[in-house]
Image 1 (spheres, rainbow, N blue to C red):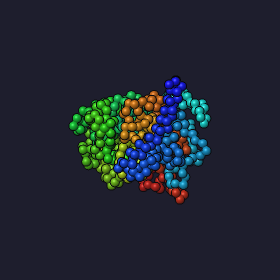
Image 2: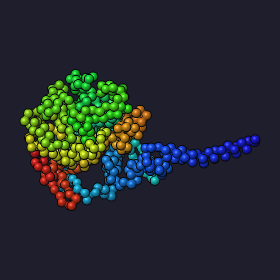
Image 3: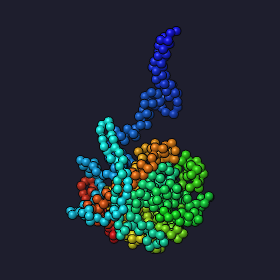
Image 4: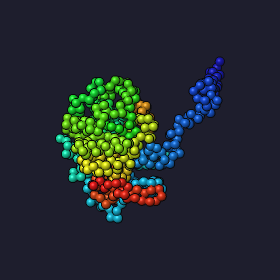
Length: 530
């Protein structure tokens, strides 16, 4: 057989194989699905049924990128997502051609004054600049996009010393001074990988004046890398401050309190979508995480939904006093507002006993960086804009508002949302998912599976490779500073000189039918200053 004949035969075999292979594959799928017993549609329509399941699988992505408008997607719209990402990448909040907000719906609005505050009248501390990296677009065409990273000196937009929030001023040996009103909400190492935690720590530390909440998973070396102030959260499982058998350890707690970066402690009574307690899949429990939490490697952890150390308001307040006495630093609680009578009973006990936490974190039921059951996420816990003013007014009513700092968290990813939360009673703002966006989160919604495609909510080293710590840390810095800058824009529009003065009198609520109520008319009691 000649060489040409051999080559021709090989080519024919390859062509036949290429033509036959798809038909053989389709036949294999048809035969396999025809005889399976799990899916009815596949038994009757193996091929069309398979197409249906493929479309169902990619449905979320198709809706997110092609079919939903800029304000429709849940839990965050495309506009919310892009606002967070663009401010982190470019430190810009500029839009063109007007807002895409649905002005027919009800919602809160800032009451701007006729004579706003001039920029030079705002009480901003930009005396020490921050060196950061921003992206600069050089070309943006249909098929080509070029941008480069440039170094910039930017103002941090901190509060002045006079306006700073002091947590535990009257109760602690070491009060916590806050110069920036926006920080990171609780996100545990283990739920997030080491690259994400490290990027957040470095980025927040660079931004100055902010804080990082460790989450209930315990304090790791990765939290400490950026030099940022830390609020060390303690959940019902007592990770990081427990004995081997799970009991509270004064020795371990005292050791944590002696770390200079740890500025406060937070007892997590409940959290947004996780009233059930925390959850971390066994695949995420590495040797390092097991060491930090004092648990077993590779075993799924479901934390209890309440502490065993206390079960009454008096016992809770006594435990807070005990921790404050041991550590000398502020101790607060994190809760989700549900049964209103329970919350009022707790505040009443604070007022009558003289014992109280140094801060309360009000987490809206719409929170949800962690995994939980659908029924709890959708129907347990009041959303933030209902819960926050209730707690604020309750503390005013019982005369203890000035003793307690209020933190608020719940989808506050832009400066205008932050301004409204401050006006509704918050002193400080916690953000989780906005910061996740800036370390790479694309809302894949697989946080609980350890298969995060961008290396954020995973401990898998291969997947974490996608997250470049240095680059993402600058986005975190830019995002926080951009939020603080935007907050001062809102402050000026309200005719104020510092955002700490925002109160109910500076917001109004517009109903869908066009009726408007001023903030003071919406809730009983007075504005933040009483």
